[in-house]
Image (cartoon, rainbow, N blue to C red; front, side, top):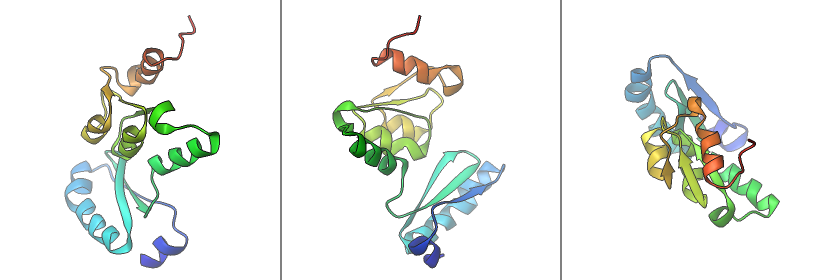
Length: 136
């Protein structure tokens, strides 16, 4: 595992429909392994765990994109999310918005939590509320 995280591994996904098993059995063991290798464990969906090399995250990717585009995330970024792996991005944004069905970690990291879920047009609502004109 250590050689994967230091040389060529980009992401490992572990998926199982048994959410309880993932969270109570697999995740604690995976986090222990990750700590020993300088990796992190996060979750995008209840049925999926992500193992990422140290320094890799959605927040890091968005930060690098903002840097390349000359955007200051702390004053110019609207970030939308609903999962644990969105938390860092939501925190760093000028405005972080969680969907109504967001995970507790996403909601905690957000400046605003919508009532609407991602399936109910939450992203569109957020864009209209926070400065994108309606197409109507």
